[in-house]
Length: 470
Image 1 (cartoon, one colour):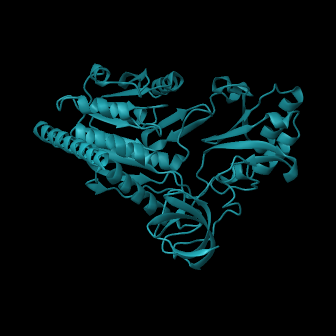
Image 2 (cartoon, rainbow, N blue to C red):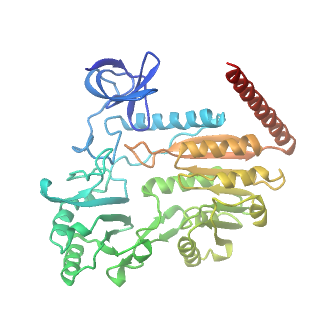
Image 3 (cartoon, rainbow, N blue to C red):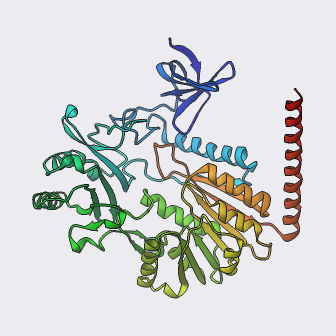
């Protein structure tokens, strides 16, 4: 039976948050400050999940979703919320993460980085399924909270010409020899190039190849094939091997990549993010700078245009090889060096072995950079980079690593802000700036941390003793 609820806030899954008798109720489809009726769909001891039945008092920030598939397709979660309000919610999530996880507050919140809110997604992984009940082949994202592929005919976060390929791709796959053995198409856009990677579990026939070539000629795309793992990806036409690249005009760079390499989804925001990161680092011509989790050199090469030496470290040799090649092509080889290493297993001795860095940039995956943060915390004040910029795609791991650097390593969290890399989704990209404290202040911070941990341990022991006695 539907009940009336007042929505207080929104989580990153775009669920409204209400409270009933102290219990949290997550309400799908509701927005902050709305009054709704909702039906409970799942009950847990500490929370419930409900779904909106009727909106009694709509939010002033509610907008009509642009995409007709919103609510079914799982690609977007926030199209019903005004875009600037989406960013404000992400900024609040970042601040809350710093406080609840790390007991930290940035000295200054940076203005959010905005970019295009539609047609921004230059990378995508589209699932392919043969579903006779829905007319044959489906090509698109999964349905929301489901393994089923959504029956989408357009997508407004993809560039228009890619959205227009969704139905032709259905027809093309359906005409091939074994459409049920082609589970995925990856999309990667570069400057003037649209690359499609077809995952196929069975060898393609000559007829299949002819179909792909005809599709490529008609729609001005290039095909890449993936018969097995990522290492097997290759261009259908040899001439396409080096065509895919993105540019950073402000640094005079063209960055070639393969369609399955990691690159940022939103090229416009990436250019703005790199420019902001370098500005926040305050790089000087005499500086030696580290770029950890450097990938293709997305930050390393721009850094090399401004500093004495840029050192990139990454876990994938294929990526560091391409980064080194790009540095050579741009005449930056003498200012750059690259190493391949698992950065999730490093320690302070490894970090010391790299030599002194004036500044450091860290851009890890969702798992964060805990080992790096712990290594930084063990450096002496004289050994530490003076300034660190940390680019994150996960507020929780950023907050965890920030706490290590601040409470154990003597860094202060100078500023932080969100980067709206993925509009209409709950994904939070952010950037944070850390600055090393003077040696005497570092010692004071470490002593405070030691005392706090000792008190927490003593309180926990006392609580356990009381519980045991009871």
